[in-house]
Length: 261
Image 1 (tube, one colour):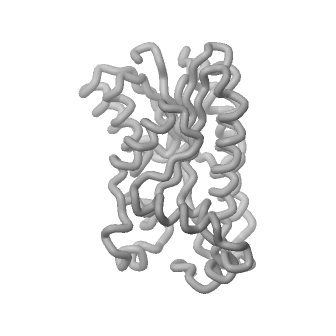
Image 2 (cartoon, helix red, strand yellow):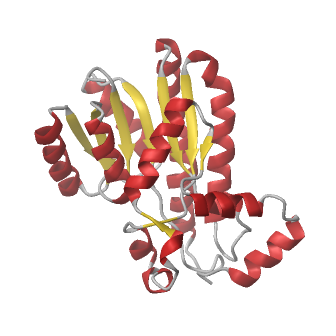
Image 3 (cartoon, helix red, strand yellow):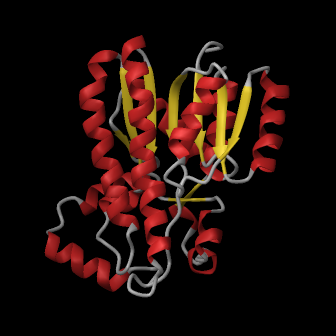
């Protein structure tokens, strides 16, 4: 893997940083992207020292429409060929839709729909031409769940799940695997940033996974060519139970039981 490079967004913490550590241990060179450059550089130094890999960093805010092109331009200038893409960066708004500033909503869409799609579009042709590539797009178990009041998140993650499967259909004949990774509750900074830590801490322990578990299952899934992966037995059961539910019932469930309402 010493000649292969993985690009990871949202790499400064949580699942993104865990992917960085996992892929470094597998021998991939890395291009780490997040807003917090200092954290990225500390992680890069750690991984270079531990595994002897090359680790470049690029500070970018993916709510900026110019960011995906800037990331790939940077990779090209550094002579990096992206063989493995982990579209991990994400957030969830917590304001009522009508109360949220449009800039906030547009940033959420840009970060988790447009940037995800654009980065895949920019790296996939090279992967196809070389006959090898791996793309993991972070979806969520929310993609299987009823919509939540005021949340764009469930719709966004449903898009990520669907587009990942569509891309996998197109690219798999050329040696490129695309997987939507759909974790449930995972110990990370996500809920701190969202402002829901007090609420989620009340959830039972069996609902939670460590990021290392999520990353390992996601990596194994994309290497095996699985178009989506729901890590953990509990999450698999929850996702399976949601699929047969009629839309009218899903709507009622989402309206009634949204934990972040």
